[in-house]
Amino acid sequence: MVVFAGQGDARRSLSLLWRAEFAAPPRVGPGPKPRLSVDAIVAAAVAVADEEGMAALSMRAVGDRLGRTAMALYTHVPGKSELLDLMYDAVHAELPTAYPESDDWRAPLTAWAGEVLELYVRHPWVLQVSQARPVLGPHEYANLDTLVRLLGATGLEAETVRRLVGTLFPLVQGSARTVADARRAATATGSSDEEWWAARSAALTELVPDFAERFPAVIRLERDGAPEPYPTDGGQDALPYPEREARETFRVGLGVLLDGIEAARTARAARKGTRNA
Image (cartoon, rainbow, N blue to C red):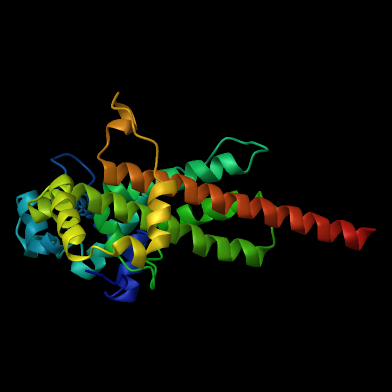
């Protein structure tokens, strides 16, 4: 299920995102504070999506969580489309925007990627929001600005930095999607990973006895590239196998990408040295 952001009224959506207009004014004077606000509605909507998934999100479901009717929400948020934009931007406020000063540009980039991965894992519905059309909210921009600054420390050209932004986000999103899917597969299908693989491995062996001859490269990879057995002493090592594999793939893939950035930096320095010679 892919959802496109920015489908509501452009001016109203952006006004709410940037709190420029249309948000209910704060109450002044004595008396109880109003029960509803844009922030309260967004927080309730995020809770619904986190717990029940994007398919369960509706103005009525959010109203029920707040003990109000759906109609009461429309005073603050015009509709579900605008609400989705607000939700998406709101969860990005959880990301840090500053990292310790360091001569090692790799460390903060690695930390940034890890933080974004965990954000997506906490809020897996965010992965269903298409990147084809950005939300254009302040927290989304803050995260982008942070990444651009971290990449800027590499000293690479602006055009290269631009393309690296477009490479890093899909890497993190893809890894987070695999982790999120691994976590919900058993509940969604009614069978554990062990049961699923046992049934299909047995059937595949019986039905395709020449599998090894037909796909020798796959067999070599499974034989030579198999990970070391994980201990079971807690921490990440206690995670289910599919999630451990997804996280290790993310770690290795990110490392190779950062190695590529270092190679690009070295090549750029060599070009500059040749020109200055």
